[in-house]
Length: 544
Image 1 (cartoon, rainbow, N blue to C red):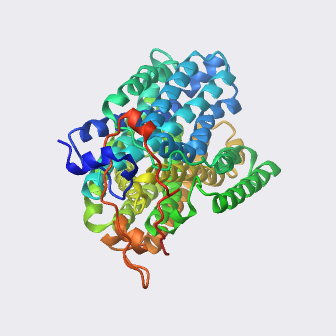
Image 2 (image 1 turned 180 degrees about the horizontal axis):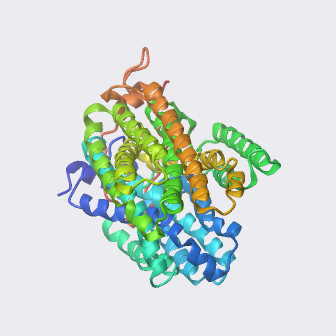
Image 3 (image 1 turned 90 degrees about the horizontal axis):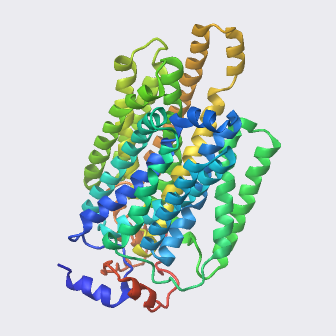
């Protein structure tokens, strides 16, 4: 039954902001299951295409160069629009953006399966990325507003994180099975009934929520410059391995990114209602979580790319066998996520993140030492178990830490930031690690003279370099956690973060009051008719 606080919140929509989410009620489990379905679909689509690429190439007569854009078109648009998607969710309604994302994703999936040439498929994949960029931040912000900060939210994010890791592995397996079975078109068509069904079910399961500043002027200039900067950055990182880092195209694009980013900062410092209030970066736990996410997901982005190649090129696995080889890793991800969600309530983010990164580095070093003539049980399985545990622990810890100090009003912004950090980190890590791994491989392959053993050894050496470089990325993330992540349980409290960051109240200042209001389900008509709050944003000044 709704509490009196819930009734008050429903009667007075402008009071919906606060630092704690809505207390878990009768529908919380159904909301979590529904949101996990959306996240599962997004993460599956990141990986499901990989093993089907050869079938797509032959079916549409695509070149090797154009084939790469099937993956990069999705990742570029997804990463570029995540922050905008999060802010749109805060402004116009999180459920509304979630539904829009499901519809766009489903229609783009239908078009992908019907594509008659590479250009049509690449364009449709870009629209799939756009749909995902609306789904991911909206779903995550709804989750954090549904579950109160602390054990409830941590448990929910543990389930969310474990399913995300499992979905990536399921995508690899499913992609191989569908490509070998009914055809590559079905890796896209399978999303159509799921996406449209989710859009129709959303109003029955998920309450609407949005920031009370909804009707203030939208920061169109800030949205345009930031989205353009992110699109250009992620596309440039993805292409750097093909065109080279020292080329005019890469350097010029990175300069363009810097100019757009500078313009964005100038705009945000001057507009009355910024898309991204710069004060959020005064929240140390949140800031460090996003920085660590860039490094951590740079590590995992490179890992999964090169682990797949290592199993197929060096160990001779088929795509389907390589997919099933990931199953223990997926199970370990789920275990690691569950462990992290329980530990972080007791010991805070820092030690859990350090432990997860230590396991990840250990797993990468085991992959680095795996011999070309090794076996799965002896050489790969121990590494996969360590990597899975580390991945689950890191993913959940960073998701939880990224929302410390983020109010309910700006939950979409927090979700957009952490998702963007993950996408940008994955692109950056893969670009740098691939440059290191493939340096000189052309000469080694030419010197092999067609000898299969020498070719295998050259490919094994390149993959070993990749695993070592990824371990260095992970070590940088470990240093970030050790020296930058705040210590103590108070570092995970939004009340302490807003009062003076990291549980230390600013000199001469009393702790900032924390709103006791909760986020109640809001009827559609009531959302549209809600009066405005006079403030443009939550006016809590946070000191470093």
